[in-house]
Amino acid sequence: MVFMDPLIEVAIIALALVAFSTVIRNRFMDKEAERQVQEKQKEWKVLLKNTDKESMKRLEAVQKEMLDAQYKMMRSSMPPMLIMLAVFFLLLPVMNSTYAGIEFPPAPYVVLPGQSWIWYYFVIGIVFSIALTFGKKIFKKSEAKTE
Image (cartoon, rainbow, N blue to C red; front, side, top):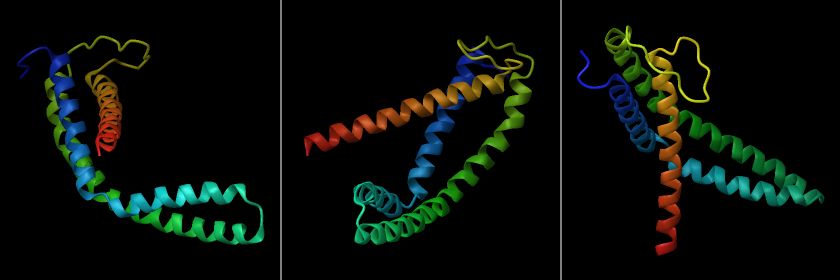
């Protein structure tokens, strides 16, 4: 049952799922491992410029530490991904039965086969996700400047 314009409904659902996904990911992600990876990447870039033996030995150690931290980060990203897949696959049949017969306009500059609701959902979801990521970065930078 469609309550308003299907384009708006699908966009609202995509926005809600992107926001929910971001909250779940932030709740489960290992922030310490993420911070370690960033620190190790900075150290790795500095060591990469040096060519002496000590730097090369330390470079190998940093690479191993970075891989361990990345493994921890990847491991902590599995639960949110599984939760979001479960939510999406539970919502998929409902959305498909609701929006299956509705024609969606082609997205500008995007050539997609079929132009069904799912393609529109993915395009809108990606746009919202990118906007949310940029907004979060801008918020963090402005927060850091005020401190």
